[in-house]
Amino acid sequence: MTKTQQQVWSMKIAISAVIILLLFCIAPVAALGVLGAKYTGSIVPGGMDTHVVTISIGSGEQATDVMAEVEGFGQTNDGIYMPLDPGNDLNPYSARSFITLDNSTIHLEPGTSQSVTATINLPQNTGPGGRYAIIYIRSIPGTGTSLSTAIVVPVFITVAGTTPIETGSITGVDTGTVTIGQPITITTTFKNTGNYHYYGASNEVTLTDSNGAFVANASTTPMLYAIIPGNTVQFGAQPAAKNLQAGTYTVDSKVLLGGQVLDENRTTFTIQTNYIPPATESSITVTPGSPATLTSPDGRYSVSFPQGSVLSDVVVTLKPYPKDQLNPAPSGAKLGASSFEITGLAGLLSQDASVQVEYSTDDLAAAGGDTSQLKLSYWDAVKGQWIILPTQVNTQDMSLTTTTNHLSIWAVMVSSSTSTSPTKASIPVVLNILALVATALIVGGIARLRR
View 1 (tube, rainbow, N blue to C red):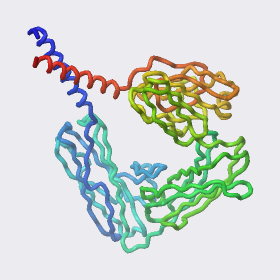
View 2 (cartoon, one colour):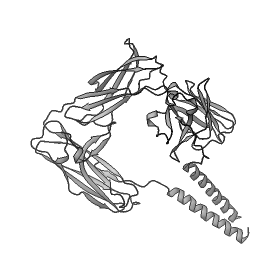
View 3 (spheres, rainbow, N blue to C red):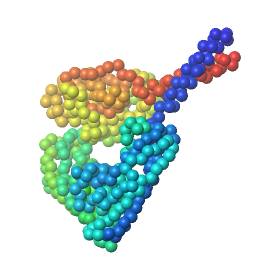
View 4 (cartoon, rainbow, N blue to C red):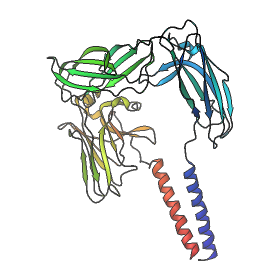
């Protein structure tokens, strides 16, 4: 090898090493760390207690300012704890006004920690049960960490010497709109009407027809979060109903705690057209040397892979995807009723697969009866948008067909146009390719230099 060739290869090795170094540097930033992330204590009326929260950041972080505040104890519909500002903290079991912090703003240097002490003074006239608040800790944007990080420290105070009451009330049972190909979701809204929090509440629903005959049932797993007195949460149960004839059905919903029924409520709903449940999950192994077809158990969805569409054996799975979790449709379009997900492939297919969907009467209704408006589309997570594909419509077998090299979340879309564009490899794929190329250059270059 000449001196000039050695210089060229030395430069290639250096550039490749830099590429690999940059790839390894693309990593999430460390978040705030905390000790004392929860307070559970028993205090007599007129008594006092303290709780220490220690906050830290990693040695790789920049110096950061952190704010700590005492807020009300709120909850999302699924029970997750969330802070409530004073204007919205109207719960009679709030302990927000009983708690003071010795410091509301602290400064953290990389790799260090500091503590905030909460002092809890329970008034003499505090009633029975529990009292609740949240110590809300968050980094101040622009003062160091790349991400604005927040930590919720729940405060559970038991009023010592008093009797806790664990009761609750179902304030609503809702089935939503029953859609062909989508699960029937029974949403039960429940309020803790007692004076004390409790863990592990669950929901059981039973579906019966107009004659009182059993149709299906379902139960939720015990809730991981405590339900705070005065707060309201929701349970979502999906009874595995089979094909249902049009008609009226009854839902019986119970909320239980340790096997004891806290409350029970009923509602009825009507199905206008015969109901078909969502497809269950199915999988196949696609190999490079053979064509393959993945079909849902009910036959509504299928994906046909040509020979050579993958470079190595891949297990591909087709499963239902809840419509209520789909991203909104693009401007000028709207979502139909059918949606599903194809998983198993990290990148793109080497050759296009054929995707076929049997559209439902609900899809057709969403299109106002105009089959030409029905399109197949997939969610491009890299671009953050729906890609609406040219779609062949067969009204004889009520099918929609398109081709794609992209396995993702799919939905029937109602649109007069398509939005196809050359598909680009996702960021992980590009990074992997760059890493492989860079590594090859380094290995090859070192071998040449050693010759």
